[in-house]
Image (cartoon, rainbow, N blue to C red; front, side, top):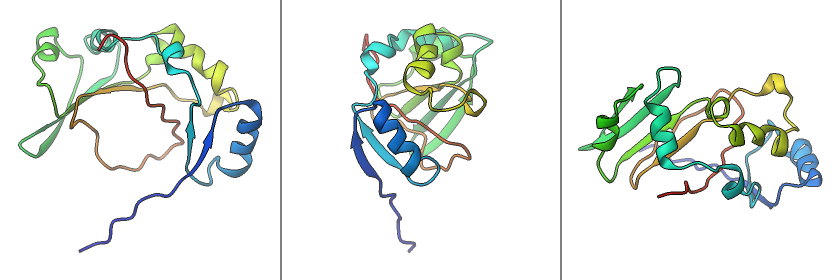
Length: 156
């Protein structure tokens, strides 16, 4: 049996200009780090789950639904129908919405307010996921730098 390897990350708190300088010097493209209380998501992400669901219905928004049914993981691509979204079970699924920063101004503002240390040419997009208990996308490796913010959607 293969040994499971878990990443070890350092932990820092807050996200000031001094912390950003430390982050660039010691972690950027070098090592993972957990930054607690970095961004006040309740201020930045003034978004509800219904906002995300509505985006998933749109032709010009890239969306994915990852579901686990009887231990089998499936992935489907939007746009979805209102009926498909409203009939999802109470567990074991995640909805992922790409380019939310292009559709919701407060999410777009996050780049300049909190992540101006990243040059514009290095930025791609802000993806937001909404998961029910048991949801997730599974272990994977990304070929790009990721800032992962964890918060709660309002209106849940």
